[in-house]
Structures are given as C-alpha cells and as structure tokens.
Length: 372
Image 1 (cartoon, rainbow, N blue to C red):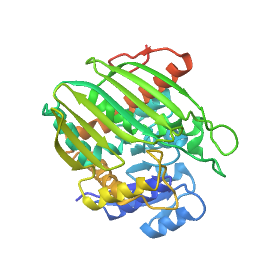
Image 2: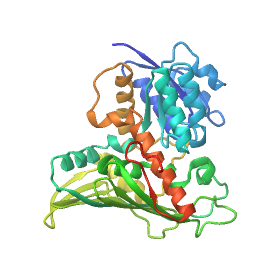
Image 3: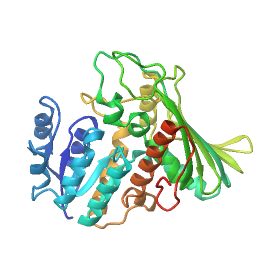
C-alpha cells in the first residue's frame, strides 16, 4: 500500500485530531506540524512522532509531505492553501474554505493549475444519517422537493476574552463559520437562483462581545422552484438546531440536538434512525447539546473532539487519501473534491451578506453561483 505523507497547518481543536487520525490511518504518515498556541504544537509532534516546523513555507516544501491539512483560523486559510498549491501539495481545507468568493476562486484556481486536489471539510456529508437522507430523497420517498427550513441558533453570554471566532472579518460570522447547513441545503436542493438576508447584531454589543451579527434570517429560491429558509445566530434564547425538508409525498427532519433523522409520510412516522449510526455516538451528541444552548457550539483547543465528530473526521481523511491515490470514492463525496461545494457555499454566503447590506433580493447565475 502506497504511503501518503501529511503536514498539518493549525494544531488546535480539529487540526490536532486530524494529526492523530492520520497517525493511525493505514497508508498515511504525519511528517510535520506547524502552528498552534503555547506548547501544544510540540506536544502534538511528540504524540504522533513527527517534526515541528516554525514557518509555513518550510512545512509545505518538505519532500516527505504530499498533502497539507489546513485547520488554521478561517482568515488564514488562503495563505496556507496558496503556499501548498505553489509547492504541488494536495490540500484538505477546513470550512469555510475562504471568507470571500474572490479568495475562494483564487485558491481553487491555484490548486487546479498545480494539478492537486482541494478537498473542503464539510463534515455533514460523512454522517450516516445524512447519507440516508440523500438516499431517501434520491429514491423518491418524499416526492418532489417543495421547501426546506434550517435553524442553528442559541444564546451566547458575555465573555472575558473575545475569540477571533466572534469577529466578522476574521471568522466570517455565524454564516461562514457555521456554513455546514447552507452547504447541505445546496447539495440537496441544487443551485440557488435568488437569495435575500436580513441580519444585524441586535443583542451582543459592547465589551465581552464580538462584532458579528447575532440574528441572521436567510431566504433562498432554487432553480427547481423550491424554497429554503435558514436561521443562524447567537441572539436566540430558545436555541434550536435542526433541518426540515418537505416534499409532495412526505418530509424529513434532521434533529441535531436529539441526534435523530425522521422520515414522515402521510402524517405518520415511517422511520427514525440515529444521526451517527452508532448508539454511543448519538448519546454523546445528545449529552453535549444538553450542556449547551441550541446549535451555537465552538471547539475548545484544549479538548479533543467527541467521538461523534472523530468518526466522520476519520472518514474525511480516508476519502482524502483515496482521492490522492486515485482510488474509488463515494459518488456523493466528489463535490467536496472538485471545488463545487466550496465555491457554491461561499458564493451564496457572500451574496447573502451583500443582500443584507443593500437590503435587496439578489439573483445568482445558475452556472457558477456568481452574483449577477
């Protein structure tokens, strides 16, 4: 079995775990890590038996590195991806791929020109329950799609120290940092042709808060005539985290808080399955949400991701390695490797922000989701 050498950029919550996963993955080796706070990078290097690099260019230029895992803060993705492409390295980039469509396009173009993959970490595609949702829809279980609705909301308290994740220009705000739901909607309903958003920072101003909008209300219309509404934000005392997809014959609810997926037809429940396909992972997810409020959850660099995230992360890394070696991968994962998932999600997110600023409905082109 051919071995693939990996370099890790960003050794925080996800980056450190990707290093551990690759260290154990057959046919993979972690050659070096870069970036992190305090002594965390050195500790991680010792744990997985690799080198520490102190400059990005030194990491990406290593001959024993075939691919780069970019898990740095959102605002730093572009630099790492462009450096990796310049050195002919394949790239796995955590979501959001970029904070603007122009940056995203530049990153994708650089990888295409270099002949390397750029896979984006839209992890929901690796949840067994969501894979079943796609199968139900493809099999016509709920008929023609009509309308979908998603909520990822909660309430955040004042913090002693404001993280970069709460600053619009560094994280992209809730819409970019929590882009998973938007990405999933686009993958299921197809190209969006119209977008509008109303958003503002209503209740989180002053010391102890960032400057991102805490209420975001989004409406989308799709080429098929279907509609979707999404709610994001930290201004909701009654927090929720779910997605409902309605068709002419039935409906599906993805309940992230209770870790279930439910299929309904004619007003009756036809099936209920676990979101993660393993009882202990579904229970762990439920318990995690019981300690939180709604869907406003952020990773702690001092902790490891829970098992219900580690398993799909392992599947992400296995898929990435297979793609590098030109091995077969699942058909529904190819959109994560050809740039389409990254491009469309960033295009619609950017258009939504523009819609909010200009207080208007924007049209999107069908070919590549550029704003007209």
